[in-house]
Image 1 (cartoon, rainbow, N blue to C red):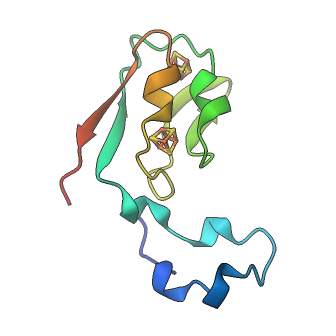
Image 2 (image 1 turned 180 degrees about the vertical axis):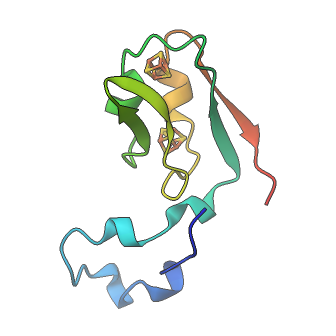
Length: 95
Ligand code: SF4
Ligand code: SF4
Protein backbone atom coordinates (compact mmCIF):
# COMPACT_ATOMS: atom_id res chain seq x y z
CA UNK A 1 0.00 0.00 0.00
CA UNK A 2 1.23 3.47 -0.88
CA UNK A 3 2.09 6.10 1.66
CA UNK A 4 -1.04 7.86 2.88
CA UNK A 5 -1.23 11.28 1.21
CA UNK A 6 -4.59 12.37 2.55
CA UNK A 7 -6.94 10.85 5.10
CA UNK A 8 -10.43 11.69 6.31
CA UNK A 9 -8.82 14.28 8.59
CA UNK A 10 -7.88 16.26 5.48
CA UNK A 11 -11.39 16.32 4.01
CA UNK A 12 -12.63 19.94 3.78
CA UNK A 13 -15.29 21.00 6.25
CA UNK A 14 -18.72 20.19 4.90
CA UNK A 15 -17.24 17.65 2.48
CA UNK A 16 -16.89 20.34 -0.17
CA UNK A 17 -15.05 19.24 -3.31
CA UNK A 18 -12.50 21.95 -3.96
CA UNK A 19 -10.68 20.17 -6.78
CA UNK A 20 -12.31 18.11 -9.54
CA UNK A 21 -11.25 14.45 -9.84
CA UNK A 22 -9.48 14.40 -6.48
CA UNK A 23 -10.85 11.07 -5.21
CA UNK A 24 -7.74 9.18 -6.35
CA UNK A 25 -5.68 11.27 -3.94
CA UNK A 26 -7.54 9.87 -0.93
CA UNK A 27 -6.22 6.46 0.08
CA UNK A 28 -9.55 4.99 1.20
CA UNK A 29 -8.12 1.46 1.35
CA UNK A 30 -7.11 2.20 4.93
CA UNK A 31 -10.80 2.05 5.92
CA UNK A 32 -10.96 -1.64 5.05
CA UNK A 33 -11.62 -4.43 7.57
CA UNK A 34 -12.03 -7.27 5.04
CA UNK A 35 -9.94 -7.62 1.90
CA UNK A 36 -10.97 -9.25 -1.40
CA UNK A 37 -8.78 -11.98 -2.89
CA UNK A 38 -8.96 -13.30 -6.45
CA UNK A 39 -8.70 -16.94 -7.49
CA UNK A 40 -7.54 -16.56 -11.09
CA UNK A 41 -8.34 -20.20 -11.83
CA UNK A 42 -12.05 -19.50 -11.29
CA UNK A 43 -12.23 -16.10 -13.00
CA UNK A 44 -13.91 -16.06 -16.43
CA UNK A 45 -13.28 -12.33 -17.03
CA UNK A 46 -16.94 -11.40 -17.21
CA UNK A 47 -16.21 -8.02 -15.53
CA UNK A 48 -19.32 -8.08 -13.37
CA UNK A 49 -17.07 -7.09 -10.47
CA UNK A 50 -15.69 -4.17 -12.47
CA UNK A 51 -19.19 -2.95 -13.34
CA UNK A 52 -20.44 -3.04 -9.77
CA UNK A 53 -17.42 -1.95 -7.73
CA UNK A 54 -18.39 1.41 -6.22
CA UNK A 55 -14.76 2.47 -5.88
CA UNK A 56 -13.45 1.62 -9.34
CA UNK A 57 -10.98 -0.72 -7.67
CA UNK A 58 -11.05 -3.69 -10.04
CA UNK A 59 -7.90 -3.80 -12.14
CA UNK A 60 -8.30 -4.86 -15.77
CA UNK A 61 -5.22 -5.34 -17.94
CA UNK A 62 -5.46 -6.49 -21.56
CA UNK A 63 -9.06 -7.64 -21.10
CA UNK A 64 -8.30 -9.70 -18.02
CA UNK A 65 -9.27 -9.11 -14.42
CA UNK A 66 -5.90 -9.11 -12.67
CA UNK A 67 -6.70 -8.02 -9.15
CA UNK A 68 -7.61 -5.04 -7.03
CA UNK A 69 -6.51 -1.49 -6.40
CA UNK A 70 -5.93 -1.95 -2.70
CA UNK A 71 -5.17 1.74 -2.21
CA UNK A 72 -8.82 2.55 -2.89
CA UNK A 73 -10.79 -0.69 -2.29
CA UNK A 74 -12.80 -0.17 0.90
CA UNK A 75 -13.66 -3.86 1.29
CA UNK A 76 -17.41 -3.54 0.77
CA UNK A 77 -17.73 -7.06 -0.70
CA UNK A 78 -19.90 -6.04 -3.64
CA UNK A 79 -17.53 -7.79 -6.05
CA UNK A 80 -17.94 -11.02 -4.09
CA UNK A 81 -21.71 -10.86 -4.26
CA UNK A 82 -21.86 -10.35 -8.05
CA UNK A 83 -19.13 -12.77 -9.14
CA UNK A 84 -20.88 -15.68 -10.89
CA UNK A 85 -18.02 -18.16 -10.38
CA UNK A 86 -17.12 -17.31 -6.77
CA UNK A 87 -13.64 -16.31 -7.90
CA UNK A 88 -13.46 -13.62 -5.20
CA UNK A 89 -13.49 -14.24 -1.49
CA UNK A 90 -13.17 -11.87 1.43
CA UNK A 91 -10.79 -12.45 4.28
CA UNK A 92 -10.11 -10.54 7.45
CA UNK A 93 -7.32 -8.08 6.82
CA UNK A 94 -4.30 -8.09 9.07
CA UNK A 95 -3.16 -4.51 9.59
S1 SF4 B 1 -14.54 -5.07 -2.00
FE1 SF4 B 1 -15.85 -3.38 -2.75
S2 SF4 B 1 -14.46 -1.69 -3.11
FE2 SF4 B 1 -13.20 -3.52 -2.96
S3 SF4 B 1 -12.93 -4.24 -5.08
FE3 SF4 B 1 -14.71 -5.32 -4.21
S4 SF4 B 1 -16.48 -4.08 -4.80
FE4 SF4 B 1 -14.65 -2.79 -5.04
S1 SF4 C 1 -16.96 -11.15 -11.54
FE1 SF4 C 1 -15.70 -12.92 -10.97
S2 SF4 C 1 -15.46 -14.07 -12.88
FE2 SF4 C 1 -16.16 -12.02 -13.43
S3 SF4 C 1 -14.26 -10.85 -13.83
FE3 SF4 C 1 -14.80 -10.52 -11.68
S4 SF4 C 1 -13.64 -12.10 -10.57
FE4 SF4 C 1 -13.68 -12.70 -12.71
